[in-house]
Length: 191
Ligand SMILES: CC(C)(COP(=O)(O)OP(=O)(O)OC[C@H]1O[C@@H](n2cnc3c(N)ncnc32)[C@H](O)[C@@H]1OP(=O)(O)O)[C@@H](O)C(=O)NCCC(=O)NCCS
Picture (cartoon, rainbow, N blue to C red):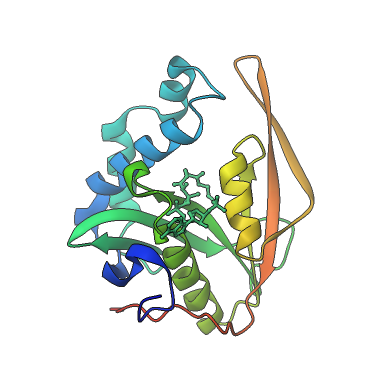
């Protein structure tokens, strides 16, 4: 156990608010993580069409970044993962329910506690800003991510979104969790 209260490599993680200059790294990590997570679910062509043009996606991230709700996790100065969160736009109260919109870790860093560290930090920031609950939508076929969220205290509610990816049906499920003060609150460096 390290000083952050997390196992493994987490002692070298620094979490900070993302800036516009992180757009390329975030885009690359998103591509790599999605391709790895869904390589047994969707074809290479399908993944390429879901991700779209990387330059366009980087431009979108650049436009979006610099606001409050995106964090990057750095390990030894390299960006290893990111999380993006905001008020939830579902049929719930946006004043009290936040949403983790994207959470991705570079695949060669999976299993080292980075996902947990950055998600806990995002939840702490949401809670400190007054939200009382957080939701996350995960593709059901992405079993590792569903298990990861459940391990962190999220539970599925009844909301499901069916979608079709070129004839391959898939389901997004919504998981939610209260943002109570946690005994294991992450104490990484912040800025
Ligand atoms: C889901 C995702 C963010 C998890 O990130 P991660 O950094 O691998 O997460 P963690 O390391 O904190 O935890 C993952 C696993 O590693 C294990 N782990 C954590 N630290 C560890 C260590 N030091 N040694 C061994 N295992 C460890 C955890 O027990 C956990 O196991 P489990 O998932 O089998 O239950 C990542 O897999 C990802 O980017 N997936 C693609 C994008 C995606 O699906 N996002 C959905 C949002 S949930």
